[in-house]
Length: 295
View 1 (tube, rainbow, N blue to C red):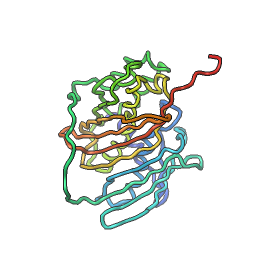
View 2: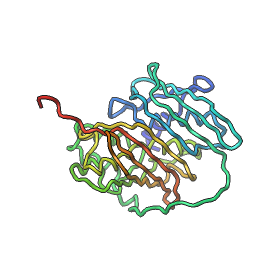
View 3: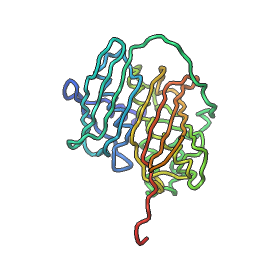
View 4: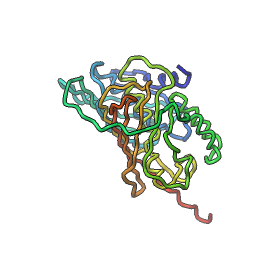
């Protein structure tokens, strides 16, 4: 296990302050706000620690309310909404500086047999045939607003082996494409056999690239190249089948629409063996900066 992955695992190991109150810290951020996937993953950790171990998340629905401050701790308060015979529901509010920055509702279920069907896995290149994001980012540093951003992004993603199946938005600025994107990912090291940990790590990664498909439709490179201003608004996930975050997962993403300064993206996460493991939907703010007066 590399140091970056251990740092990420430490980030998800929240401090328990009271029975249903937890405290987390943040990683150094490339932008002056906490990464949304981190807040979502930490909130799910907090919720999961109040639920029997045999019950795992089957869905979450979340809203990003305010930008998080990377320099301050985040306090997560868990509300035990319901404990049923098969399902458990939790609500989590993340607070900084006395204000809520994030709200999550999550539902947990004990395993049971049922009817099964799924969409087939789309075709995708072998992940080992693709360059890692850490290898790709520095090659495109000349496109970025800040020359150091590419290296800092590479460092931030060292915990996860992330591989684009095609050129990402920051590598194809000015070239509108079909609003679809694929990435393979897995953690850079083996993990313990803790199903909740694997779910929380995939929740963390799910916010990294989901809005890429919106950018591709318009030939925009994203906030890293300064041609859009963006942030996650809400995020929903459904966990269908068991998976491991330390084994290859295919994140197949598309955008059906963008309008009103917002873009919608959908994602499906498949195991390397072809099982549909997770479905994801996110809406984000995506605005084109207006030229300053006099410029």
